[in-house]
Amino acid sequence: MKPQLPIEVNEETGVWSTDGLPMLYVPRHFFVNNHVAIEAALGRERYAQQLYGAGYKSAYFWCEKEAATHDMSGLAVFEHYLKRLSQRGWGLFVFDSVNVETGHARISLHHSSFVLAQPDAHDKLCYMFAGWFSGAMDWVAQTTGRSYATTSSETQCAAEGHAHCVFTVEPK
Image (cartoon, rainbow, N blue to C red):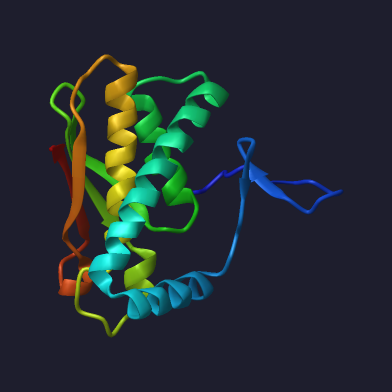
């Protein structure tokens, strides 16, 4: 993969953006160290719940904005989302399967930033992404006339010894 991510820097404000959305670009270790510190302070279960809701809302918003920016719709927006996540250093995301009619998807994540930054950890480390995928799937559903709402979870993680991480999206 050769990322061709457009990054624009406003010379007057210093704000960085991609596709018209303001961005923050930080080193992986900085982000993961903060993530681990918050997880330790709140506890994993509570932190994961907070991340799920925030991630869901953010993914839904992102899909709405990117659909308008690139004149895209439906599943193409979710596919674009996985491409952009992959280009931003989170890891390489691909659909193993997806069914917009039923609200089911299986997403593989290779080279997860969380796994790479925590080589001694042996647990599900990538739970932060779960809300992102249900938010994107629900955006697709609601903009294509489907009535389901989904939930998503990390069902396997490379940190547990698997070849890659897997997320499952399904109707509630």
